[in-house]
Length: 429
Image (cartoon, rainbow, N blue to C red; front, side):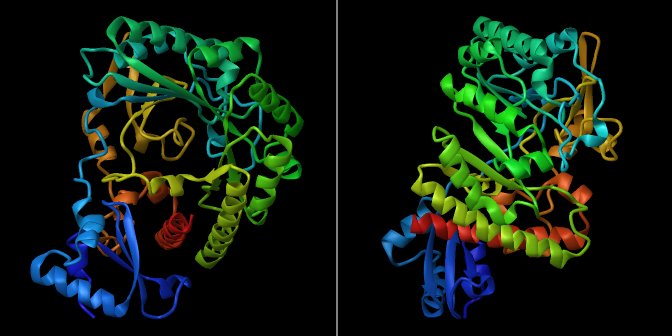
């Protein structure tokens, strides 16, 4: 067997299928993340291809050379290192919530804070400015651990004011929101359609699970129906916990039966460092998530429903850093590197805040911004040969700050198992 280094230095990664319970001994996936292509080969072929690379840096098979090496993209930074280059703004209008979700990442920060129109105007004047940034496509989203539509007047102001700035200076702005689905009316519907706002509704789909974890099942169903009747087709974001991890197929079936117009579901596992005390327990949960996710995805395909997740989507991206760097405007007028951290009541607040609105001025700690966005955990020895290094980008800083090393190792193991299954799933389908 040739050294795997001859593959790695060409950004090719050998994945033994046996290690993941997906194949027999001596079977490998040879994966080129930069070319978005893979082949399944046995050990004899691995040796032959390794010898070819070691001898001349190329494969003798021209098609294989093209698919795995010649079509590889050049790696360029997917992140910005200066606030003046940021093109994405996430606005957390408030920390007020009318739900009490069992897994809420922002529960410690709930209160009565709300962004003022003056603060929003200052931020938008800075953000949508031709003297700040050269690119002309910008992105504004509304979300957070509070319910954004509780502050509907502020959300509406942002869209109206930023749209006027965009028209004046020649920008194009894409909008989106993430809501718990509790607030909907004709004024909101009109604005969503006028500004072509991408809709995301957090909803756990099954009545018993929704009412245990989030409550207000009937209200959310009513407002979902209103959105669909008005030609707005949201992505449903469902949090997968120990309570529903085995019921993902049932969730797809329920969507098909009750909301046949829905076409996009995102099933993401809960982020909670206290979910399990032992690494083995966490891995068992992740294994159940993987098996049931792909069963749900297969059923979704039958119904023309796309079942995806953040980790699945990451395989479509080439990343040098997990976080591209953006503005996450908190309800008290601060800038955070992550919308998961937005309140002074949260332990990691000081670690993530790098700027603030001060009257009509915006102040940044540019060195802190740079250090946050350049964070990577890819220097660990196990990252060098990992086939996910160009999709993971060195891992999430929030995860590193909240999980133990033992739990982080489990998360890495999970991501490899899930991602390999996803790569093979793409071949089969």
